[in-house]
Image 1 (cartoon, rainbow over the protein chains, first blue to last red):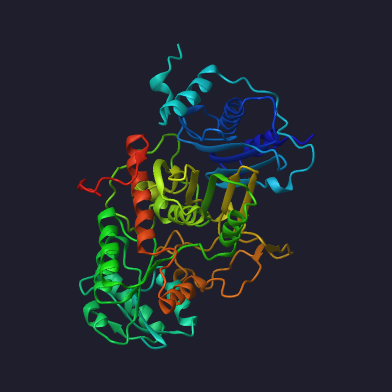
Image 2: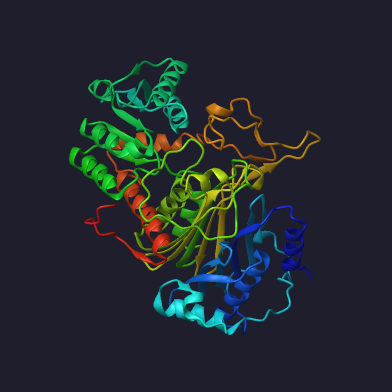
Amino acid sequence: MHLLYQTIKEIIDTGRVGVPVFVRFIVQTTPIDEQIIDILAQTLVMTGSWLGSIPAKIYVQHRENTAQITATAEYTGGQTAIVSINISTEFASRIDLMLLGNKGALYHDGEAMPTGFDLGVEPMTIPKWLIDVIERSLFTGEPIIIGEVLDFD
Amino acid sequence: MTKPYGVLLVSGMMTHQENYADFFATDPRCKLIAVTDEPDIPVRRYELNRRFAEERGLPYIEDIDVALSRDDVNIVSICAEHERRGRVAVKCAKAGKHLYLDKPMTCSISDADSVVSAVESVGVKSQVFSFVHQSWAKSAKESLKSGAVGELIAIHCDVMFAKGYAGDSPLGKPRKQDPYPKRFTFIDSKRELRATGVYSVGLIRWLTESEIKTVFCLTENYFFEEHKRNDVEDFGLLAMTLENDVIATVSAGRIGYTSHPSHGPMRVHLVGTKGLMTFDAGRPRVEVWTSEPPWTPPKINPEDPMGFWNSTYKGARPKGTWIPIKAKNRHSNDVGYFIDCIENDTESEVSAKDGAAQVEALMAGYISASKNSVISLPIPRNIKEV
């Protein structure tokens, strides 16, 4: 089992790339039971774990009748991410990842992914508010500032 | 118009003219005529222009109107500072000269409209420098045309430059963006959403052959204290929809010398109904690992602390791990293509009109980042600031 999530987290924890500030995360997966919105939410949570923050602003783009969804997110400390999930019936699963720190960068090239590769991360708890925010952005076509629309109390 | 075509250079050292002049000089159909500029430029710019002309054995003509009156000038390569390049381009077009334009073409939508209007009314050819003639971009275009990814659904483009000494910008807060930035030229920083994002916006429009319909943008300060001090973003994201309903995203910025084994990440990802394909400027390549000491960034030149220009880091040791596979005319084919357009009386695929569309998307980005909203294009032209 290859543990991408843990590997990235451990490199970040060494401080070699400085403070993580941006993630470009492109996932292509073969059809699975999970809803594409749930995969997006899980990936945003995972990205936030690397960035040490939670999303503060999310803009989600999806075209009807396509198996693709993209979110542009700003996290509470000003970190950002673009996460794109694509479900393919013809191509193999892959993960392309670029994580920028303020003093270095990590690159993971999805084309070199071995058979049987997965993220190697325990399913993360997806907060309900995150699904709500994703759906709200899709419905309105606008970015959602999470602090303005949700009551965390 | 007879060969060799005379090329006039507007502005010189410490601009992209350092590269463009070489492109024209190596094309056998062209001959460099002179360096020129506006007569009232600051002393520093004047000295840089004169030095540039002297180093290349060219005359320096202090008044651009005098230079444009010469019959042996057919083409003008324009690298005036961002704030001046709109009016300079209009002047050159009205003089009947073909325009090779640095990117981004102008600082405002109104200036961009003026350049397009001048070019179209006089009937000269125009081209804005872009990456579309690089082999990785061409491969992406061929894959789209062949249907290798199926119908295009989304396109994601990253262009960043691994230059400058990163790590000294204070972190922890989102950036507050001015919706209508006015100043674009600094010795030690550039508005990187524009300066690097323009490549991706240009590639996306060229690859998809579709106009940008909406823009959402985030700008940030992650890497450089210089950018922060000048209230200039060193990083930016764009999330766009195109008229053909394709979703497009861009990440752009300057990320520091040591963040990449070569010039910086430059990639385009095509997501189609069949799946994902990625095209990378760093491929194909040869990787070299040796017992040499590892590469270290050059000593900072206070005249150019961010390492923008070749002339200020002459003799600096280049990174040597990734060696691109050589291609014929790898760096000069953008100019070569433009000369083809002039000779064949065809419009460039990245003309002033395309340059204006790039400027509009980028300026919409600043408005979006400021207002935290999605901006629809075209932007109404009755807004004073555009």
